Image (cartoon, rainbow, N blue to C red; front, side, top):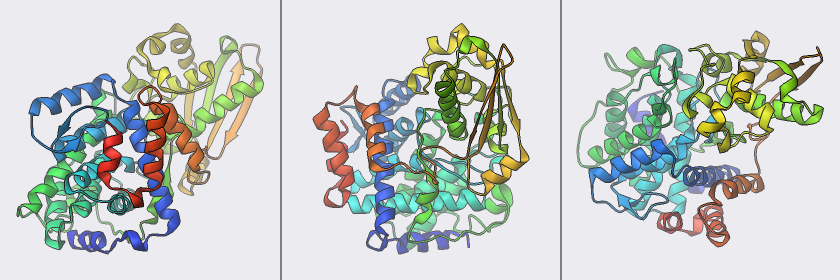
Length: 450
């Protein structure tokens, strides 16, 4: 059942010592992936706005702001560090038929709370497992996207559970924390519809901060609505509709989480990979391309293919990384999809602006069925100006749960994201610490992230 009591019981039942070795390995991969992406986001303008705001609050605290010679309170550190992890749109994603949240949005808040309490690496793994499990179950069983709510409405609940776990909240405190978080912090879908704005990349950071604050209130004795889900005018009645969850203390929902290979929205991954493979294989000259057509599944068409507003007017990064026309055009021209694709000058160049307007995106009901069965299909046709056509069909991509990244690939991504910030020795120390979290304290990890 979905109640604050069942969530509290789940948090209390989850125990690192009971986790399968493969679960532990996957959770550690998610930690390394997330901190690497976070460090790679330093300097991005919206992230710097968050840093200036957090610094301006001037709260005392012992929680590290990643990549800075600065600290803050746990809620403010959660806001800052989650903004880093999320902003580039290079984070992981949970794949459910009606919702696609990003479980890595929970990690910044959990690390902040763990640093505050002097928690161990085992405590971190356990709390991250809790957050991933709850976020996955909510995404699968209680999607809110079509009801007008943003997926970070789930994140504030999962982050509260993860933060509550590592803070050591007792049963009643956990119920109160989840009740406060789920009552007071529900987010509207408008941030990802129509003209995409920069809040899209920061909304989960706000949810993470609110989750931690809810836990601290509960820890200090604040009572919250313990009938959050089933109560009159509660979460089920107003937000989600009726649903049940089956929270597994073994926390195996992490296996349903994908790791992004490309800096692009989740549902673009197979299409981008396929188009790059096709362009390289056929040596396609972008100047000779008459059109690019993508047949895809419902979610991709809805979110990044024009179902919630035009995706042809692209002027900013926030618009570009949620526009299939832009991402496919840039991928064909550049044969890659990295942070460089979202530089303002790159976005405005005539080559990509012209080519993106030749891109068409259609939903294929058969591909939607395949997506709901666990694939991420993409069928692409490129037509040249002489009438020649080239096609590629994809079932998934490198990083999808059906084709997961191994440690070497995750480490390679980490190296790419952090090479401008850290020397090789520091990078090696961070990788080693995460791979052996059981032997370390959280403070040892965050000290390396300064």
